[in-house]
Length: 153
Image 1 (cartoon, helix red, strand yellow):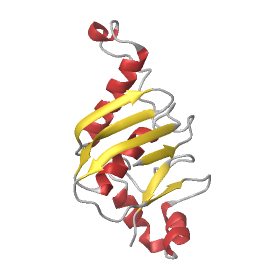
Image 2 (spheres, rainbow, N blue to C red):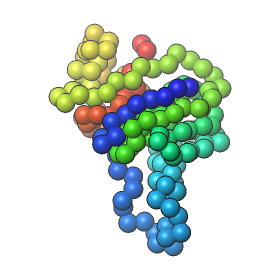
Image 3 (cartoon, rainbow, N blue to C red):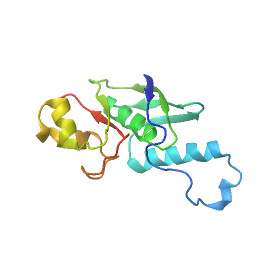
């Protein structure tokens, strides 16, 4: 549990798309953003029970996951959204394991370069790629400001 910082202007755009007009007219912009974030977690298939999101100065998330990896993926999935600067984690983990470190992608970074910095071996890039699925679809699709999980070896 804790507070995680992200770059507010970097990340995936979840809102601003033309949404179904039926319910959206009644919902506030905050409710629409929360719905979009909840939909993103569902789309990614990250298992979290009792997911609750609050949007204030930051996103406050609570619920329960089986592993730290799932907890960290929920934090990153929400933190790597454009307009989100902070995620307050209140998720409980049923089966705790060693936590991963987080790394903010810099301009010119590749997963191989990050792997070399973090593990001393550029060929371990696939470990980072696998640890960040389903948020990453391809090892070459990272961007400056994105925060990645760097799991222990």
